[in-house]
Image 1 (cartoon, rainbow, N blue to C red):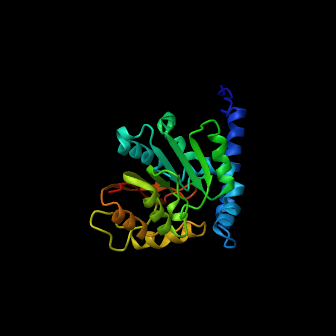
Image 2 (image 1 turned 120 degrees about the vertical axis):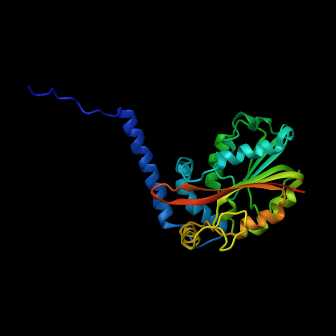
Image 3 (image 1 turned 60 degrees about the vertical axis):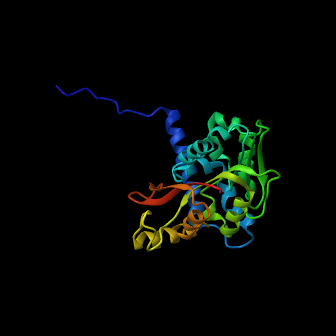
Length: 264
């Protein structure tokens, strides 16, 4: 006797359509990543040309690429402690506002939240998300020169410091706007120096050559100097070094770090 035919399992139509939409969104983002960031125009124009067409798909793809952001947010909250209620929080290079969402309901405990970015298309996404929160201010400005009316209790950069051409100016500007005792946090890609400090991870020569070249095509510049500068400016800090998978690059893991320092 032959066995009865067993129908093949099928995904519900809605699930199939959702997967197709997700794949289509990924393909759109990947196309722009392969094309790279334009070389012409000022920084604002380059960012808008590169990120504008992917703004609607930005968060979903970057959630699988930009690791450690939620952990950084938790560390910033812990570092603020009892000073968090009513505090002034600033994110430099905040884009769509996705990182602010990691604060959850605690975003409402801050007295003022300011998100600064230079890309209009990404800022429009942020304005939609936080339109009903009057204490959240979305500002189009250059992180190297913009200054708040009141100093900040905490400032952070989530995968933005490596995208700012004059990152030293952005770092100096952030330090200037931070209160004494204030918190500065960073999560970002990096590569180690050939001979890093004894308490840091050393990446091999291939990693130190490959990842900076790979990301530079899209306007992201990895180097060991940024982390060294952070440690110099914030002697009191905690540092976590890790690796994370990259979408559609199986078997590869990009180095990243989380840094939380306190201004003396």
